[in-house]
Amino acid sequence: MDKKIYSIHELNQIVRGLLETRLPNIWITGEISNLAQPASGHLYFSLKDDDAQIRCALFKNRALKLRFRPEAGQSVLARGKVSLYAPRGDYQFIVEELQPAGEGALQQAFEALKQKLEAEGLFSEAHKKPLPEFPKRLGVITSPSGAAIRDVLNVLNRRYPSLPVLIYPVPVQGKGAEIKIAAALEQACTAKKCDVLLLTRGGGSLEDLWAFNEEVVARAVYDCPVPVVCGVGHEVDFSIADFVADLRAPTPSAAAELISPDGDDLYNQFLQYQRYFSDLLLRQIRDKQQQVDWLEKRLNQQHPSQILQQQSRRIIELKQRLFFVNKNLLLSKKAALDSYASRLQKQSPVTKLVAIRSRYKLLTQRLHNTISNQLKAKKNQLQNNARALHMVSPLATLDRGYAIVTRGKNIIHDAGALNKGDEVKTKLAKGSFLAEVKAISKS
Image (cartoon, rainbow, N blue to C red):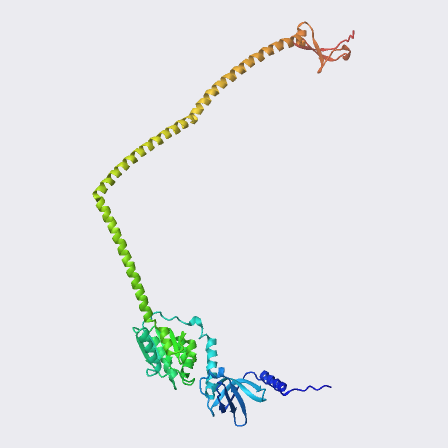
């Protein structure tokens, strides 16, 4: 069975990977010893307690972000990962963040309060109020003897010296400072003398700035109806009040610049407006002067009385033209109306009824004459037919002495059809009679 044989380099790499994987980001605490800072800018030291120690390395890119100067014997909190320096096999701690041990508890309290207030919506952008473009009075809540108020006043005097400043003096650090800061904010809001407030102080340690990380100050800033600018510490310093304020400035001087308009810019804008309106006024004066000159020229060319006479003659001419136009229009309309009346008369129902009545009489007379003639012709034809019919009629035969013998409805032509004792009817030319058959002769 082949054995796996590791080189020292391979072994150290494996151990390094295991350490960095299992312990990638932890906090440790200890006392600094064996502190060394070579020309490279890295920091090398050991952290120890009563029972053990570990070598630590803080590289230059992280060391430049430190807010304090590490010293031997100082208790610190360090965040980083456990690793191994493979060339020598040294077990070490790579430091990512370093804080004085006292600030560690404050930092944890800072993060806890920050998360709480953020969850409640105190940092919401929707709640932040805009600053006035040209503030009427600035209220500054700060220490009256600190460097911050001097920086603010210097900037305001340079940029916007006409801005009145009302100072609300408060302690900016130490026990009870947060209560007085919150009270000053409430007082400034109640007084309603300022349309923007500046909460500020100079730089310092986290402990020095802690009054601006208290919840009572944060809620006072949030409840303030007046826009609040917070300029606490230096560029790298962030406080809870910064997150709640309507605007955060990196320094007191920067806060004064953000609040105040630039007087030089305003003066330059004023000069531009002055030149613009001066040019505009000059152009309008020139235009009006040209208009006056033109009107004066026209006035010299023709006097207003002449213009009035011309206009009067023009009005008379137009009245005459209007009269003739209206007269011709009326005559034209009258002729058209007469034409329509004539056409209407021709189409009148009375006229049509007279014509229809005349035609009715004519047609009635013609119909009467036609019927009379036809009746005469038919009467003559009937008489002729009657004479012709009479000539062949049995009645004419009867006139010559003949008779018609019937039994019932039957005409007797043959004596053999009769029986002795039958009753027969004999019709003569004049009258008829009943007879009883006494004897029958068939010859």
